[in-house]
Each structure stands twice: as C-alpha cells, then as structure tokens.
Image (tube, rainbow, N blue to C red; front, side, top):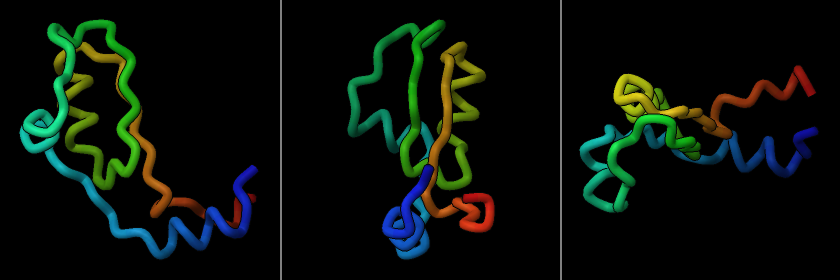
Amino acid sequence: MISEQEVRIGQNTAMTGLDLLIISRALALPRPLIHKRILDVGAGYSEATATLLNQGADAYALDPKYVDPQTY
C-alpha cells in the first residue's frame, strides 16, 4: 500500500524519462541485455524501458508521478 507521503512525493516529483543512450552514458549496463532483469525507476514515458525490452531485457518501468491516489 502506498502511503500519503509517498503520493505527495510522487505528485511533487518531476518526470524523468531519459532515453537509453543518455542512461547508458551514466551507467555501465551489462551486455548483452537478453534475460537481464532491469527496473527503470523514475521512468517517465518509459522510452528507455521500451528500448531495453526491444533488446531482450526483462525490463519494468516505475514512476511515482503516475500514481493514482484514488486506487489506494
């Protein structure tokens, strides 16, 4: 269950959504990505996650900005 504080943090957090090229410059991603499990936290519109999926990774996107407080 998401707390009210977590909802407020999500509402006041800027969406990120960096593409995989930018992320790859900052992180040493394992190669090849096939069957690697990756969680993209602060995913924004999830372009990096989509690219990871296309490259064979088991990728998931999470962004607190998209929480729906009415469901909790």
